[in-house]
Length: 174
Image (cartoon, rainbow, N blue to C red; front, side):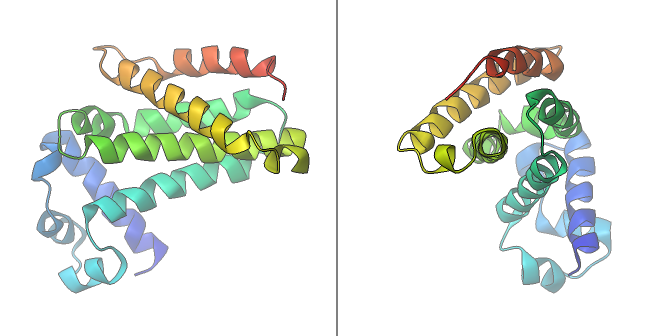
């Protein structure tokens, strides 16, 4: 399955989640919507959870490879677009059996981008520091919690979360 087909499966899931409950979307729904066989789906994804991991990883890589900058704001703008695109998925995941998966995907995504940002800013000294892993876990967990609080609101404003985060990171030095 080409990345084009994988992306079509992700798009189909995002479209289906707009009108269905998160946990009610099946592989059958996805293959019918994409006009592919079950075999094609299972050739590349073990299940819907793995497809979601692919989707979040792809979006995350787009963000951190697009920016080689000392400005977290550049990352933040792309994250706002990412979270707006996945808003319904994340909102419905809060009320599903997949909540922990989606929470962990948000945490991992942020950790990967934050690591790339700090690595660019601080270089090898940051990557090899003993506290790096702890710092990434701490900041990523706090960030995911802020995003969950935002998702729980009737009116979500991801830009505000990232604006506050950008302000915090601007003065942060290791």
